[in-house]
Image 1 (cartoon, rainbow, N blue to C red):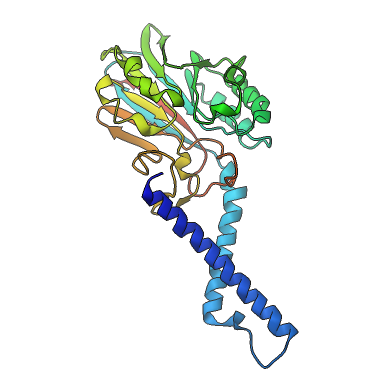
Image 2: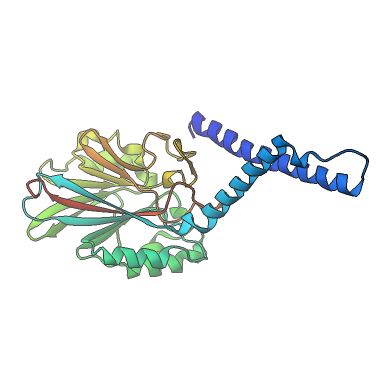
Amino acid sequence: MPLIEKMMIFFVFGGIVLVVGVEFLLVMDFIWCRCKPDNRKSSIRSKPAIAVHVIAAIGLLCVCYGFFIEAYWVEVNQFTIKTAKLEKTSFRIVQISDTHCDMKMRNEEKLVEIVNSLKPDVIVFTGDAVNTKKSTGLFKDTMTALKANVAKLAIRGNWSHVAGDKELFEGTGFEVLNGKKKVLEKDGEQIVVYGLNFWDSSSYNSLLRWNSPDTYNIFLYHSPDLVEDIQKHNVDMYLAGHTHGGQIALPFYGAIITLSKLGKKYEAGLYKVGETDLYVNRGIGMEGGHAPRARFFARPEIAVFDIVPSQRN
């Protein structure tokens, strides 16, 4: 984790602990003065105390918003990408990422409804399926219900150890690209999708070495960490997730933590890196373990890419 992320965690959560601690002391002081009258007035109504109350109240509202509103407020981001490598045919690619399914259903039904309404040619899943092995059933039911006209493709993220590899995608209709490529054809034209599992990052050279500069090439990898390394390999689009857009972000600053070796450089959204369009998806679910199941200024998302011929208006 970059030093700046460690510092931000310290300052943000240190500030929260400080405000909560001061508010607690003010309340205790008020209760003490009411129970033990000794001519000393409580400072709970002083101007500094009122400022603390306001900050604490705003913080409480933010917590409620993060846990109960934004975590369920799915955003659909759509992009049109023009390329000279297609002549007449367009491909609609829908990217989903970081479902992090728990035992409790959150956005899974909404995800299926939205994705199927978009009528994708290709659905790609860029890793991190479940937070617990017990939620494998929910994940599989969700992925099975997704419909695509041409293909459903997946890679594994850094949480793939939670459930068995075969068990996760077996029977869902998704093909897992572990160091493999998939040639996709529609109306006589082709694009090629390459996929690499998170723990096989060093294999990108052998995977991408022989790709054709005349074909529209898409690379799937769970994090954005390889985007600067693959520049010599004719990759037109790189789709990633992993960062969650920070999951908890700050206005004007963005992600507090990304868990990427590149830090905040590619924290969320669309970037142009050399000749490659990089998209870092904020994901649908939330980090497992002891992480809070909340989002703040980092809404769950579905990304849609219409890859169209450059001569099309």
